[in-house]
Each structure stands twice: as structure tokens, then as C-alpha cells.
Length: 460
Image (tube, rainbow, N blue to C red; front, side, top):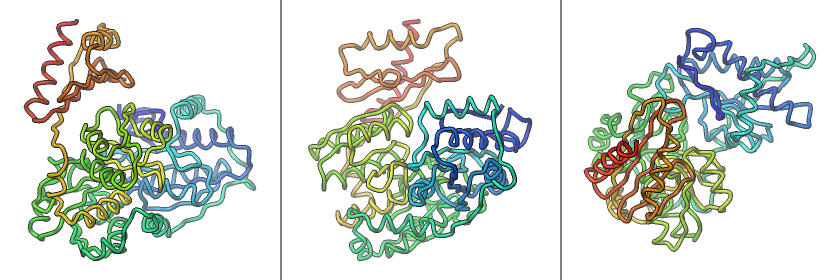
């Protein structure tokens, strides 16, 4: 079974049986549910939705199903075609639309696709709204429009231009400083829409782009999650081309990873750290990440006399805390940059522009920039439990066990020690506790994870 329904949307593998996979009927039902939910909650007759998709093979088919379904409900559709998640997020308020749907399974392999749902601000709908959409999908309580009331359909081809111009107009982007450096950059866009959007941005910034896997045909040449083990080709090409650095984005361009001039990974956790370093150097404020992100962001914020706060895991939770604290910068340790002066969504394009500005102003190589940040190493483990064990009770016991340390229960249990931390989160689908650790060495991070597993076992 590869159909996953959640408050943030629906995703699954293409083909197979209805209800088990992302079939045409499942796509139509879920699009109908979101359209109906909007109609039930908006006090206006003519609704307009923005649609955009990444380059995966099934995108055109899913796009046709979604747009036709919305028209069938009497909703107008503006189709951006091949786009990025942040571009759709920018275009929803730009066009005064009532919401949006992004057709992407993010970093999942090519057989996957998904519908991600946006409100009128171009932000992901919240948990309460998502639950209402899911309930509508289950009830199939839809009322389609009569022939004279069908929705209108139009396409837009200027969305990337609008998105990029908004980035260039930001006061914290120094276009002149970047152009003066004439950076040479290798780009791995995993044959998706980053291969269109990122070179357009880099061209406007006076950079030379060496393209690797930039043909938007949806044939991912490697696992599309931008992790070190998947990125050997770009690491080699950066060295071969004597480039200043490499840029890696996932299929929908909301995660940004960097490769330094020596072909070494900058570290996806440190994309946000570097951008925050630049912004907080120029404006005291608040930085936000989630509980499973690196302590390095907190350290950098403190060097600039700025505050740091951690949210529960999940982009919606990060955004909510950013709004509450009026944060200058936020994001997630997976390379997701959220810059609220542009919009409240993870955006690799604005991340690239901010990083380039920082690099140009510091007048350093990428490896020199990275060497200036605290060095931490992360570990990820899990402990599988028998179904009869109460995971919540176990986490409560762990909280009491370490009550003399700095403990957060915002999302599971996070224990901050002086030189390292551990974050324990339960799986929502199986009796598993996921264990995230961070320390000053990989060995220490791994040992901390093993120690926590031993402690949990002792409490069972």
C-alpha cells in the first residue's frame, strides 16, 4: 500500500488499485475534496486556484486530472505548468488567488507524486483544515457545476520571471556584489524544474552555470534526496570544472544543498546556518529551526546577540513559530530556507541569492566560510518496540529520567546536554521511537544514540 493521506496532502505511487495507490480516481477525489472545502469556506462565488508541477513523468497526467476536476466544480484554474514549490507559493498571493495545489512528491523517487495544498497566502494549509479536507474526501460529498458554470482555464509562463524579480528586489540581496565576483557554479537539478529556474536566477546574478542533470524530463539520474551519498557526480564535476561551488536542489526546489570548491559537501544543515549568519549580522532578530536541526544555528544566533527558538518538526510548525516570534530567518536542517521578507515557504532560489550575497561580502571561498562555523555531527537511529508497549509512557519516563537537564516536550522528548543533544520522536504509523543525536564528533553522536537505546530498553 503506497497511498499516504495526511493533513498536508496526499501522496502515493502511480498505478495499481484505487485506494491503495495514487490512481486517477484518488487524484480526482482528493482534488474534489480540496475544491469543495474551499467553496464551503469562502464567501465568494468565483474561486481561482494556482496549479504548478515538478517535472516528474506522471506530472502531466496528474495535472490534467486536477485541473479538469477543479473546472468541474466551477473553480477557475491558472496553470503555471512546470514550476517549483516556492514559485507556486509566491504566485498565489501575487495573483490574488484563493489557494493553490503543487503537484510534487518532493524528494521521493520518480514513481511517486502528490498533491500539496496551499491557502490564499500561498502557505500550506494547517492541520485543522487538512483534517476537514480528508473528511470531505472520505464522505465524497461533492456537488459539481452545471455546464454554464464550469471553471475557466488559463496558463501563465511568466511565473519564474516574477519570482526571480521579487528576489532581486530584496534589500538584502546585493546583486552588484555578486556580479562583481563572476562566480562559476555547477548545478545538479536532478532533471526537474530547478534546471529551468536556478539558471535563470544565476544568469541575472552574473554567474556562469555548469549544468548537470538539468533537463526537466523527470528521469531522476540518482536518488533525488540531496544527501551526500547521492551526489558523487556533482562533487567530481565541481573539482573538474574548477568551479567556485556546487548547488543541488530536489525535484520541487524547496531544499538546497551546497558543495564547496574542493568537492566536499557544505552540509545540508549548514545551508540555513550560513544564510542566518549573514542576515543576523545585519539585523538583530530571531532565528527558528525545528527540534531535530543542528545546534549550530543557535550558536550562530548567539554570536550576533540574537535569539533562537525550536519548533516541532514540520514546515507548518516552523512557520507558525516564525510568525509568533516575528523571526528574521527560519527553516529546517534539510536545506530548507524560509525567508519571510519574501514568503513563508522553503525556497531554494532565495536561499541561493542570500548565500551568494553572504559569500561575496565575506570575500571567502565556500570551504573557508564553512570552517568558520561550529562543527557538529548528527546521528539517526531507531528502536523498534512490540505493539503492546506504550510509547508515550516510555517517553514520559525518559523525560523524568533526565529532568535535571534542559528538556523540551514540544515534539516528543528532546534532551539538551552541555555538549550534545538527543531528540526522541515516536512514529505515527508503527511502534518505533526515532532517535536523533548531535555531538562534536560522529563517534560521540552514534554512541549517544546507542546509550539512549540502552536506557529505553532498561525502562521497558
